[in-house]
Every structure is written in C-alpha cells, then in structure tokens.
Image (cartoon, rainbow, N blue to C red; front, side):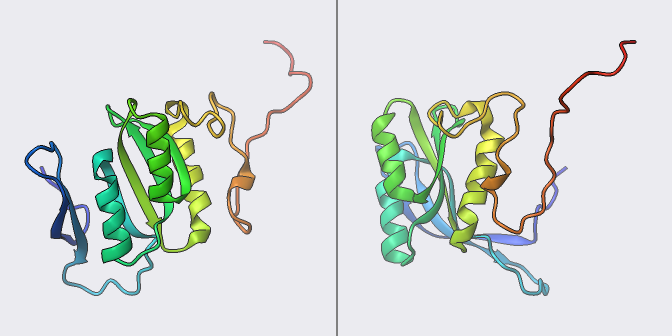
Length: 176
C-alpha cells in the first residue's frame, strides 16, 4: 500500500551529468507544491543532493555556482561504496568534498550536500548528522564519539533549550 509523503510534485529541469560511458546520471529539478494553501513556509535548505557519484562533483559544482548563482556553503557527507556516511563536515561544500575525495579516493564513492538558507544553522545540522552516523565516521576521528557518551551541548546555538544526562557520582544505594 503506497502512502503519500507530501503533497509535492517533482519536476526535473535537465540532466547535468552522465553519458554513455557512465553508470549514473544526475538531474536537476525542483519540488513544487500541489493545490492548497500551505501558508508561509520557511525553507531550511536551498538545495539538496543525496548520494551522488563523486564523478559528478565538478558538474554539480558548476551548475550550483553558474546556473543557479548560489554560494556553495552548507553541510556535506562523503559516503563509501555501500552508501554509509564516512565523513561529515560543513563549509565550502564542493571544495571540501573534492579535498576529502583526494585523501580517500578508493574508499569514498558518493556525496550528499545540503546548502542551507541560513548559515547559522550549518553547525547544528552538522552536529545532528554526526551524532546520527556515530561509529560509521571512521575518517572523522576528531569529531565522532563512540559509545553512549553524549555530545557537547555547546555544539548547538545559543538560546537552545536542552536536556542533558548526568551520571550520579558517589555511593550506590543498598545492594538488594
């Protein structure tokens, strides 16, 4: 039984990568709302691309910068051949992905990127993705935390309400 995720229509504008020799193609498009009055909605992302082949990086970069006229800043994910996230970061998306690919050329096969509408959200989105990916980030040893230890609450923006877990130190109650 199919269910509707949203009242959206996917419109593909053009193919920006792929030829007879390549296994993959990459298309550019837009999600359009169907009938109805959604009210005023604010978008977290300007552009997203998920699990695109690294061979398409230059074509996607050129399309975003030249055709769409956007600054390519946001959050990015580099994936291995199984689609598992191995590196997550933020900043100049295509430059950083290109550098990461040069370091792990054999391991990394796909990339995802999220160009954010408000730069102030980059750090929180990166933090959320890193926490979700956890131990899979074998190339992100500086940022990942293994086990059940919580992250640093200061990774989020000022003004954020939070709940934090603390370990109670001292004697334990009577043994049963």
